[in-house]
Length: 175
Image (cartoon, rainbow, N blue to C red; front, side, top):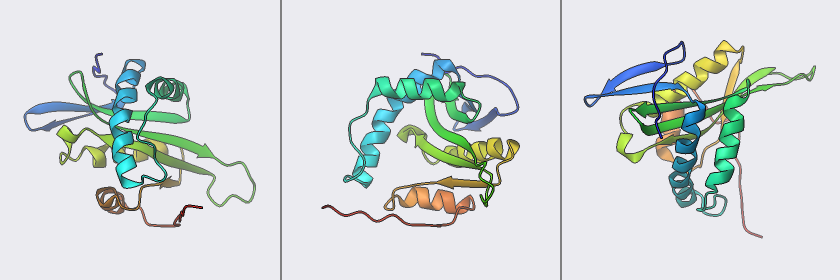
């Protein structure tokens, strides 16, 4: 499946280790690549939080989800590609609250960040995160939120360097 490249305001080309990497909004042809990458992400997430995350991944369900997501005006999936190879992805949802007492009316929720192990330490996670935040800012969002596994120190460093701070914590225990 060809990941290809498209030019536009939310498309960035970077050079790393003698190869051109394109960061852009996902297209329909990227859905299968992202769905298959989710299998590796599920295994990694299960290692971090085995009592919550399943090691199994339903590729068909992921294809349906991402297919609907990229067609929605309130959701974006950004990808990092090198030729036909998917190197990373991040999902971002625009959440609009119409409640009159809502403190934050428009916010973005970042999710599903994945970087292929062969592309780590190139700054792709930081760049994809920045691209997702820029997309939300361009739609009037005034806050960004995300969740991450507590043991994931790499993610914690990334998000803290991007200005995120811990706001709440979730505890779990078996019953």
